[in-house]
Length: 509
Ligand SMILES: [Zn+2]
Image (cartoon, rainbow, N blue to C red; front, top):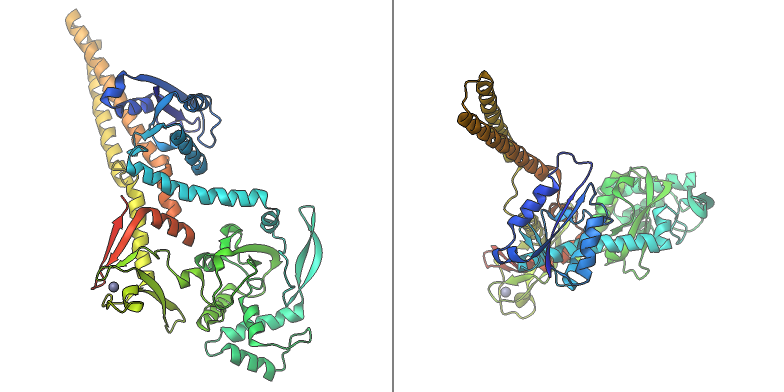
């Protein structure tokens, strides 16, 4: 069995920390008894972390697979890979072959419960990354949607389907029918008004004799369906946020939400209009131009939610903290219930003690525990915790700048001494002994100076190279409902709510 020290440096980063220095860092975390074991060093100089096609790395993995390695030490996690899925796959392989994995800079050690926890969280994010990749690559349907093809279903009012060719593939495209589009805009504009209910909208249309131009009649159900359809909106980032917040799977990247094109919501056929589970739905940007401005369209969505026509989205119905909340008074779990709709048309959810609601043995907290407030608070706590995972060596950029400045001053001082020494030596008059001493002094000064440069290099690389754990904190910022739930499941044991409403998070680590 051997211990591997692995170092990697990209070509493009001239100022990044050298492989030799990385190896020194790796050695520094060797335990005393490990220093006598067989140590192997693998170095990939000039290789990017974007893939794992690296000579040294592949040689190391070969030995890992032959069960010849007991431990792998790196300077930082991203030396292994910059891709989260690659990284997680490698960790899995290490685990299968009982290889411990240690990073010198992130106090990351897979043999500790702490390290295990990080691996689990990494896997949550990597898993989502992987599934979305699989969906994209293997499902022709998803592929079609990515290219903006109409995803089928009944032809929406206001458009006709015309054959077209996109990327050499025959498909159909929605073409607006001007007279119908005009009517649709009118419907959205009328309904966007504060005082107009669906019922009132229908009355107005009837009074103005504005029938659907295909000869049928309007009904509140038809109108509600029409108003909910993103095919009409000029989808921008606000529309993206709206669906993302509701747990819809966003197929098209946010950069495509330019405020120009319409979108299509598709997916599950089983659909309870009063209580749709939007997490099974997908949203894609299509190739036709939207007909309703996003602010008007969103205003209508808020009104529809208020009217309960749209029902409740995932995030409206439940909480990603569900199952984690405990009432301190009686020890029963707390679940979300819907509150009243406020004047902005929003419905607030709050947590209620099941000991109170189901068993009538508890009075529950004396104050309302609003789900949104609690979620925001826990969300921030997790974000902080994830940043902490980076370890104690993390420093802010400002302190880095101060540190670098300080080191530069020290270098200046050394350079001055070096110059003085050189001047004195050049002036002559030294005997051999003194000359030898002066030489020794000069060598020492040079060594100190180089060490300081190395140190600056190391500090800079801390800023430059955002490592995987930092990315984790970033991923959390953009986590959707399901990811939040998964991460909360791993990190949090329970959240105890006391009678006065104060909150205590019991972490799993
Ligand atoms: Zn209770």
